[in-house]
Image (cartoon, protein in one colour):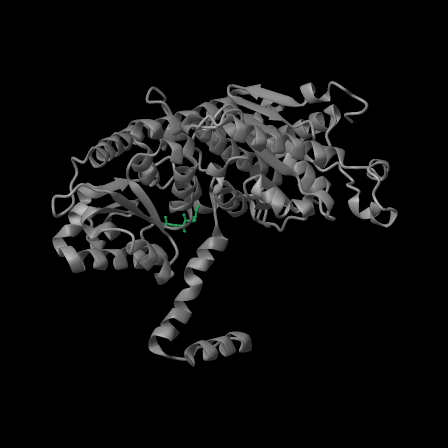
Length: 507
Ligand code: G6Q
């Protein structure tokens, strides 16, 4: 397509604010794009977008609205949920976050022995962990003096490794759990509380523990002071909640001003998504490209390759966002689908990925559409390194597309019996997003871009993207076996599980 149309690169691109999206290196003609837009129209995407932003209960299977967009809405806006404008309450919580963070960062807030806080330990899992981890890593350059730590896994060794690094007198614990019933988080919070009170006494909990949740009564039972509770709403799903009080650790680490910039970036992407025609709408175009490969090319996965070390947790964060939302096989009528839905998401930062799994993308047997995300400027301004990094960024997508022909390999004087091994077929699809600079605002735009991409895919695939019954099952499954392990009793299991339990119990 590039050979027959020298202008192609300029045609399949969207330049919006500080985002430059080039999707020309994909197997798409203008007609394909037109037909995919028609598909989205047929699925009534514009109406669906309206319902999403208006706070209708589009999470039908849980009878909830999906209003993470309201969490970053400007104060002047009104978002009605059950006839009530939720924006003033969102801003009340944001102001509480601002004040609390400023007092911790400035040192006004003190621990039980009068010392200022040096470390923050976030205790949460899944949606109450992955967003804060990814964002605080991504914005490390904008971080203050507070040391940030994350306890998520119920693995006691993980907990101890974190606790051994911090001092009870100067550590603040942020317990994040929308439900406040999650086994891992409650176990970890209980262990952390004991670790603190063993040294500082029961009264220290009030100064050292804060919580983020919708479940105020459970927090009370756990013993956290009601003044130290940051509420969140039922209409925000865990994996979309970093914009809410779930982002408290983010706001502590980068300061409330930067946290607000993150929200503003997301809000700009919300406006772009809600107001731009489908063919120039970044999340829509990206979703349609995914659908194109997933449903018409049989591609099983999509790679996310950020060319910045700061975004090293982005693929893991998007694995949850995308796979938990769109990993569904029942359509909106309750019937099994007879087509593919959510794809596998994976990736690592370039250039490291080039020295590892890129072999399979270049010469393997699978079609792996990849997103390349890069930045025009580095944060420390080291041009020499940045040029090297970005030279790889551009060269890879070019090579993935162009490949290397037999003739080119022979011209290099390669031994004849090695020629087939050195040939690259090319035509591997990539989409390139070149952003001016990584900062809180551009990161907010990037995350919101993927959130809306998830939404569009769910509409076209006719599935419910906002429940997660598969994850809920996981929350219940271990309980029976845990009881057996605790009581040393034998339950009814298959012969494989029985054998494994016998071996485990044998010590
Ligand atoms: C996210 C999921 C899931 C959830 C965790 C933690 O969308 O529902 O990852 O965030 O299971 O749940 P709690 O915040 O209720 O502890």
